[in-house]
Image (tube, helix red, strand yellow):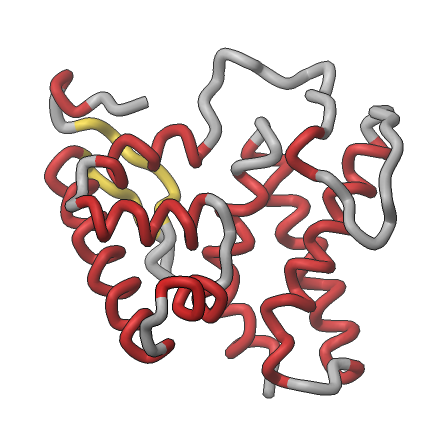
Length: 185
């Protein structure tokens, strides 16, 4: 298990998680780099490969708490289970600026109902694929295929609507709507 493999697998999920909780994309990207450094330094302490995702998101949760504390926002936190959904907005945040999740949700909701429900639960609400599969009573491998298919359908909607600028790993760096009819956020 090396950091490149781990990071390639989870970077997009971590980025989406941070973008949904931090209004300034530059701050979210800085925090993503901090998480990379922390995970690189501590990867050898991880005892089970099956807990990598939970471990990374625990690092992300704690990094978010530290970020908001540094910004001067104070709120009572339960250190074991921080309630990140209710963090105060930073003074320099822009409440009229949509989060990444706000921009993605209309596209997701344009998908067939089963695909939309799946992506909302996993990619927007952060439910694990294993938990979703168990709750819905389907095989985990089947669910993984459905997630991939749903994400491909979603990407198709994005590409119909927008010119995408991707980085070398395929992550969206910038987008430009192809026409006024495509403005979703």
